[in-house]
Length: 581
Ligand code: GDP
Image (tube, rainbow, N blue to C red):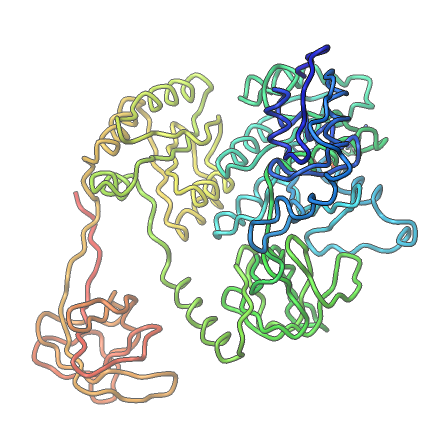
């Protein structure tokens, strides 16, 4: 901490944390810490009382001169720093990560226990996926499912809900493989990390070694001149927990987390289940606005009117503002974790939006492959190539990593977002999905679960036995020179002449104008040459009979999956994808 004893500073009547930091030439982090010691929670742009500012300055070794009478200062304080529309500070949402058995669950339990108020002691807490604690009058929301896998699974579904990652490292074990994974996952998501060095009650605890090992993995803690906060704790004895919570608040303050509690509510589903007596239940974290009982919500492909809401103690609540987790009852189906939710005005709107979302998810997102990225690079659409490396030895992984990192061209950057020894795991593929990265596997296998997810999420896992070939492929991709391995082949066209209503939707009465159309073929609907829908042929009939294919010059009825708004003159284009080479 910068100490400038004997220096004199003149402080204005009102000033912000930033002003004070500049006036004293002391980092805003140190200022905010001093403020917290005085029970003042202030963000960097917030104005602070002259007296408080003076006391902070004195504590940091300054003599304070008053530029104006402090008495007047308080009067103006309210008005300052509130010119940012309707945004208000909100609690941080925290996820706990770390290696197995390092104490993530114990830490979450310990935090929950130490922060229940007197009348709640003995109250049975329910697992709804998240809980809130209150420290110095400010709330912190903890996601109750620890681990970077859950964190990245939510991200892979498009949800970014976590503001701060607490990395638990056991003081007797130090950095382990999943610690490194957790660091990489948090970094890939751009989430600030606070390290909780746990189990300091153990005789074998060696917090100093943990700190040094952290530096090896790019987390330079404050003591060594870096920015990362490391707090020694024991989930067993509860030592250091308050300190940890205060530092979480500190990082939250610096991040200036804000949300408007009065706008149309939105948020993310973090857990869901089918309850035998209550029906579909979903825990949501509200991100903006205030969710209320009676609101009509849409969550992924589910919708419904909120009949009741419960907090983590099972108590009914009627309203939930930003960063608050609540379990909601009233949805028609069980939404998926990671699904976004929003409040709409009318049930009809909710139903339609839910159906639309279902269609969107059916039409899977774009594939992530080296060829596709190479094409995007060639077209100037992307400037980053994110890569995950899994290899058989430390030596091979490091060799690949350093060669790949050197490949970046002037306008394309190669980011190795994670590299480790071992098979390609589910968590690797999730990270690839969340960060649109490709996975390169050198002399290692792909776990069956990882293979399954890579197929549904369409993530490219490339296997190599020769480092040179691997480097060469990535180099080609960086230069935008990689040939696509698949090509689309058009099979035929059908013109829509009439539209028939059938059970479950509409089919188009068509004439095949060229080529042929096969049942289950990939298909798109073109209207005046513009594509309006892409899926598959769901039914193909001639004279009420299901047929396999229909050729040029013949009439037939065609149904297209998840589409029934045909119009006369539309063209159905049938196509398939062919592997090249
Ligand atoms: P997780 O796999 O990271 O969730 O770890 P757990 O919370 O399940 O803890 C693993 C083991 O470490 C359990 O036996 C805990 O009782 C123990 N443990 C967790 N925190 C502490 C601690 O601060 N001190 C001691 N001595 N043991 C701990």
